[in-house]
Length: 233
Ligand SMILES: NC(=O)c1ccc[n+]([C@@H]2O[C@H](COP(=O)([O-])OP(=O)(O)OC[C@H]3O[C@@H](n4cnc5c(N)ncnc54)[C@H](O)[C@@H]3O)[C@@H](O)[C@H]2O)c1
Ligand SMILES: O=C(O)C1=N[C@H](C(=O)O)CCC1
Image (cartoon, rainbow, N blue to C red; front, top):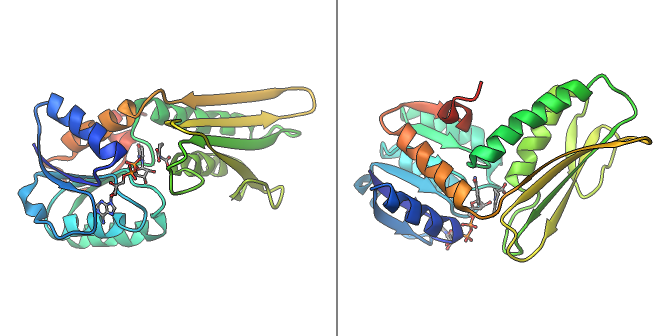
């Protein structure tokens, strides 16, 4: 495939290596708000910044280029992006985290939340740790985890750093140099604690997942998720 990289930073460069190793060609390396001819590409992969993702993604829809986006921190515009995708018969996959491990972790998180939903006396807490260059907090992955808990418990929302009410999930966001991404969910009671944790050792898992998703999306129309790509039941 001819791939357009929208965003050529840490993730863009990791994706480039994996894409080339899988026989693909990088035809665009977009690293700023510059004009490009996206129609040169068979597929686009957006790992840019929160303030550019929506424009990058919808430009692909309008030009008939399937697009995979991993950029986080722009989801206030997600439903508007879906409308534009539908209007243009586009093809789209967004994932807060493209690694296979985290997508398994998302399902584990929902199952645990379901089991805990009728058990009293446990407080829920979350922590995410990323590198110091990360622009958004909490991470998109942490938000997806919190949404999985909210879907399966009486929790109503999440708060960054501390719970403003007992109906919300507190998410602590820590920034430590070079950390690729660690996510923990705790259920704490007076007598014990239950913890689930995912630790990324590098960006390779995110990048491989994004390239596999782009390969899967080619030739399709509609909005899909990594559950569709990985065929997770
Ligand atoms: N979904 C996942 O699996 C996953 C994994 C890692 C990172 N991320 C997310 O991906 C995004 C990028 O992460 P990163 O570590 O590569 O960041 P980064 O800062 O290293 O790279 C972002 C790049 O976007 C470029 N950019 C700025 N304006 C642009 C524009 N208008 N169009 C295209 N590119 C533009 C910047 O110059 C930079 O090169 C973040 O939102 C991060 O949260 C997602
Ligand atoms: O390095 C980042 O930035 C990451 N961002 C994603 C998120 O916000 O969840 C995925 C993990 C790494």
